[in-house]
Length: 254
Image: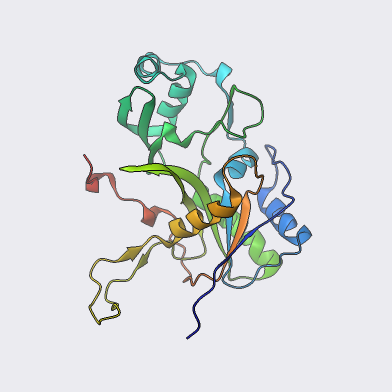
């Protein structure tokens, strides 16, 4: 049997996304102009940053009035009070607050620093902050519908962000929105090379795809927010990204 081959194809020429842009149409247009028609089984990876921009999830920090709680946490963490106020609005629980670090449980269910609020590559200068999309799974579904109409069905979509991990340095790409395929693959019942039955092997396939795509999309000034991941075996599913999250009552670190 031939070894599987996976390709990562960054889509060039993606224009700067503005609030109100039709992002699904923009993705289709970028693929078409680049001469990159999709194949069945392709997964199109889109950074959450351009989703947030298109959906108008942009805040001028000068318009944010910090609450007393935000002022208190800002003093503790050495962060801007207006930013901390946005973090509180976007989160359901403070996980850790220490100097330079504010980790929360986001309203979408994942745990991240600063509620995944991003200020890098955000138009508008130092006072601009980007919030996560309201519903990344729904955003992924809309993009997939446009791709299906343009190229035929059979593709998946992942919306990505970069998150830190417990006891590991640095950030890595993760899936915050998934459409069209099974993002979490339970391999229990299968067997290893020596015939041992797998008891608890679960593969976060959507996260693996997100991390792989980040190798070519970059994190700074690359301007490559759309990546095609080709050659990964996927199974159809409408479960979305929620299956990738541990429920709070199964938190093993506190």
